[in-house]
Length: 199
Image (cartoon, rainbow, N blue to C red; front, side):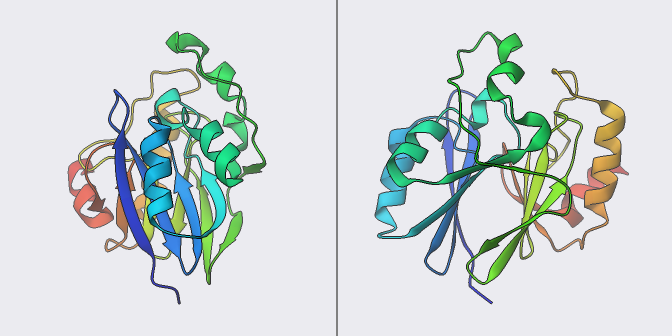
């Protein structure tokens, strides 16, 4: 099994987390929200890699603004939950000019992507948006804006739904408590620690 390496980059006015995840000689980027020049610099510092995917946990502007620059420079394939594929439309009510983003792969519950000797497992977790997904790589859960260290993401944006959020959280908390959580904002935690705030 590959040794997974994870680097967090905090970017944009919303201080969203972008993650560079390395398995062997392969790289995926999760939620490149803004400040593409900084992300590109950090990728270049890794040396020559096989640039696999940009994994989007959902389509909100603070998680996608650097996608086109990274795709153009490195040739990543862009992956997002099927219900968030219309990124520009999803952001219309934020009054933010989000560029049209070409999505290469839409994913649903149970899908898996090859990554080094690992599998990237897709968990459908609607609630923050209808197309929100989490990505499980080994025992590392990239939870986007579904789960933060002390609370869950907002459900009052377009396509959000509090009932679906409750179901998604219950589903995540069925995973082992030792699972590391890398959220879309704030610091990392574990499912065991996060679970304490939802009892």
